[in-house]
Length: 170
Picture 1 (cartoon, rainbow, N blue to C red):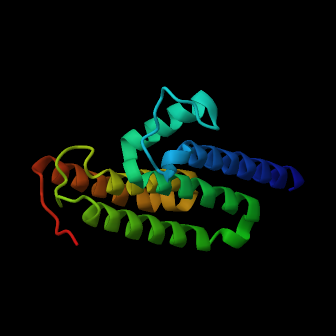
Picture 2 (picture 1 turned 90 degrees about the vertical axis):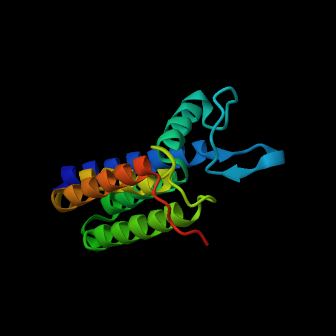
Picture 3 (picture 1 turned 45 degrees about the vertical axis):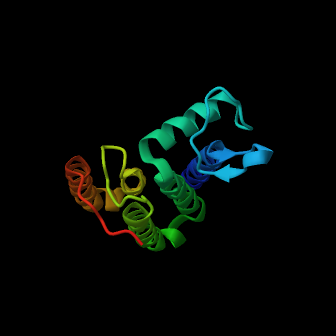
């Protein structure tokens, strides 16, 4: 029992460090242009070094502004590991609600033209899905239930992005 608790705490700390590393890699610390969730430039080195710049660039390229949901899923997973069974019931519901509501709203209303317009144009929505897929792979129960549903939504997102379907903008 004691070895299992130690392993759980170690996993929680590792995922917490990883999520903080990714979060810092997506922040531009240039005093003239301080911004969060920017496209990191690989020729400049931030506080996380070259590895952080590469990780931030890859994460931003694939999921864009939805990158925060990947980081949030890692943070929630580390809290679940550190807190143990107390977070067992709260974790799946909070992750589900956060990722779907926020990334869906961002993807529908943030793009100025209201058009998906290509495979990476709906990156906010896909970022939420990628974050949820990571989360569902880490969580044993929800991985069995949530992954087919998320796979269907990713398939739907791909079809919509290829057809150029227009959503209303604010």
